[in-house]
Length: 376
Ligand SMILES: *Cc1c(COP(=O)(O)O)cnc(C)c1O
Image (cartoon, rainbow, N blue to C red; front, top):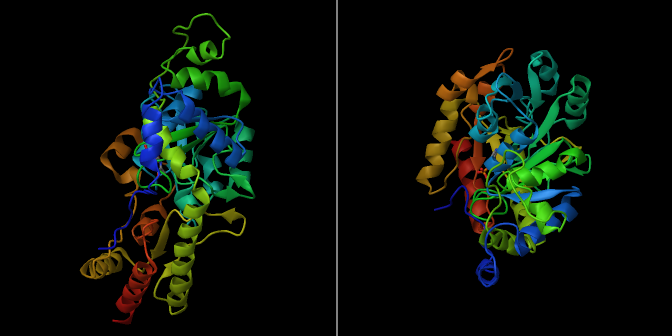
């Protein structure tokens, strides 16, 4: 059986977790918390990275940091995971969905400005499949209207836009280390705080509303409740687990890229015959081989291909059901403008298996099966 995704396990995780367990403290904020923060700061160029308990929690921390309140509106694509919206719904905001671009499946930057009202507080671009949104245009819109810009870069670690790491371009960026992502700690995430004026408060929000981080740095004599906040620091067991993988990041990235490129070469051949469409990565975007998807003619065709692959022990899957058509999406959000591409394009999209454990034989089998389907 060739699975869609398998969690990354390099074999060194247990040793790092054992070391974490031998420390005096295993709660958040220790040695491995600092090592992961520093690694990500160095890798991305972000001035301030804080590990969190999940990507969802990084988004919730971002919503608190930007002071999103009841009555506010937050603009995002509908083709995304529930957490992108929930983080702001939890603060009482209304979600305003705008259409995506058919090429990258990312928010259509040309449709954002029309969705802005006097209540708009923030724009949340989602870098789907680790392919960047058009950030120059989106940054300019946010600036022009005085809006917060929060990047959902849950899938975007190690991906770049015009040379800049995803998650470092907006006021705040959010990463995920869920088991389905390129690097994992089971459940986990990171908050990238790019706006210097938000940094102190980010620590307070992540540390249960206390100024404990000032206390640990010796800046105050005792710490107490200074603001709203939650318990967003991951335990040392989880950050140790992730850190062991980050140290071997090059090896993981090389392998994923190799699989992605192999799929792309083969699928481009099929594209020439009009069988399918391949993933589009604009030349100024550097992806991270998080997902490889193809698009077929219709939802019907996709169901047939999925079944054909399943019969050959290969798991391929569609992705998000657009949020605006989900029950909670109808309750907490509205779609601004016309849904030209969101539903149509998400109905045609199929992800091929992509994970570190895939062998050459596996990828060949997937490619042969897709070819076989289009020959019949
Ligand atoms: C994975 C993901 C999240 C949520 O991250 P968790 O770590 O699972 O909480 C949010 N947004 C997007 C786009 C994701 O892919």
